[in-house]
Image 1 (cartoon, rainbow, N blue to C red):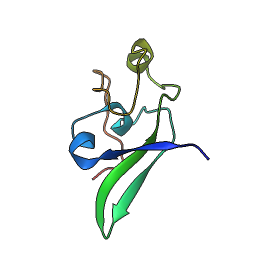
Image 2 (tube, rainbow, N blue to C red; image 1 turned 30 degrees about the horizontal axis):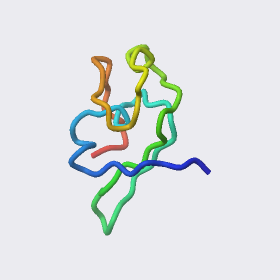
Image 3 (cartoon, helix red, strand yellow; image 1 turned 180 degrees about the horizontal axis):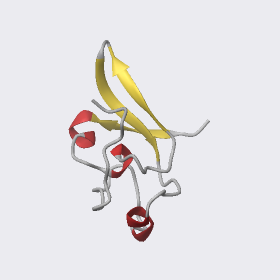
Image 4 (cartoon, rainbow, N blue to C red; image 1 turned 90 degrees about the vertical axis):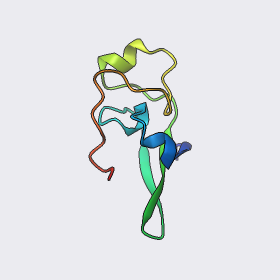
Length: 75
């Protein structure tokens, strides 16, 4: 099982790496009642896009690069 970092709503709404369609790590959505509260994302995965590969300190809460595309599972 891969340990994942919980990213709260105020962060995942700001176009950060772990909310990008190209995020290379494991992630899932954490709902409380019917509301999405957290995106849980693996830290420092292998990136799937060139923009992330140029960012050597890639992490879930880094600001996304110009290639950012919002993850299809997010509201």
